[in-house]
Image (cartoon, rainbow, N blue to C red; front, side):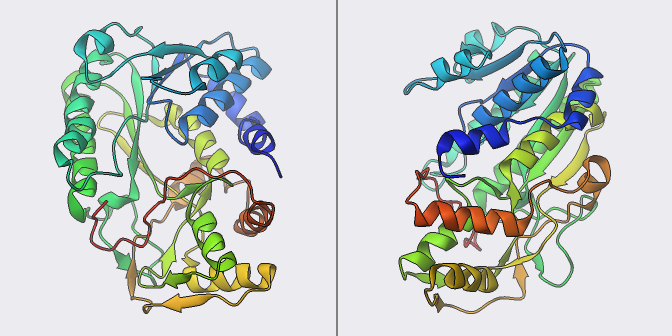
Length: 338
């Protein structure tokens, strides 16, 4: 894959399993916060699955659409867009009452110094959304940041493990989960908490950040020495399939790749591909932000795109100076300051 269009086409190609699962759902699909990094490709994947399966559903995408051409792009793909500021009651309450909700709205980067907005987006807004869509089923995008750092030898936190968010961003994300859970109990709304960490495509993510540093001979900090990653197309597929697994009280599901990826070894692999010797600073610690996604693999199967494929695709992208999205993951952050 050498172009953005090829990347987006790959992420928007539905599997038979996805089409079959969406065929079992009654009602349309509404994606709240479609304007983020993952939203456009998820919406296009849903729309293609609907068309290829002849499912007769509408796919809606909601965002402020305050700049750029994304709204026109989604409309051209067959998605019905709605421009709305979800923090404005009049905008939220005017949305159609759709049966299936993918909730992707939230705030992470820029939390430090703007904590009030992060809490409004991540913990206040969920209550308003839950009341508005009390009669829907809701997949709530959350994050592996709700867990504490865990030993790199244990395979990552499981859904049954105790939470322990580090920093205000992670705390506000746990707040989002708690608020949605309250309204699931109150209104008997079926939900699923989708705890994702480190989806990637060629334009952003942990692999791209490491590859660029190796290629540019910049130092790589090893203090967060391990991570999990998953191809964004696989994460999108699992999010849509999760609509069939919503419950009250909410189900919880870790979504990431199966490997505990060594940052040092990853950099060395890119070094071999670029014929460049990586530069390292810091020392690997015994703990990292890691999740165990075995339950997701039981439900949906393993990711279709392997770690090795992602590495090779990313290296090719960097060599060819492919377009990137300037939204660093800050995966190295150990104190939760985003």
